[in-house]
Length: 125
Image: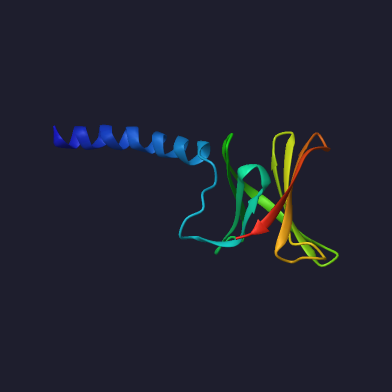
C-alpha cells in the first residue's frame, strides 16, 4: 500500500512540477544579483537583475496597476549609456541606465508595436 501511495504521489508531482516550471515567469532569487534599481514617475519601481550563471537579464516592475516580471532581456550601450530591453508580446520595455547629463537619472520607455506609449523619468535608488 505504501509503495502504491508513493508511486501515485510521484506520478502527480512530476507533471505538476513540469507545468509549474514552464508557466511561471523568470524569477529573481539568490541565483541573481541586482544590477539596477530605479524609482520612476507614476509610481513605477524597476529592478533589473542578472542571473549569476546564465547571465540572463530579468525585469521586475511594481506600479499602481500591478507587477510585471520578464526575463530574457538584452543590454546595449548607446553613446555611453546602457539600455536594458525586454519584450512581452507586442510590448517592449526599455530602461535607460542614466543619461549623458546625469548618471543618477534614467528613463523608462514602453512601446507597443514599435510606437512609444509612455516615457517616465527615473532616479536610481
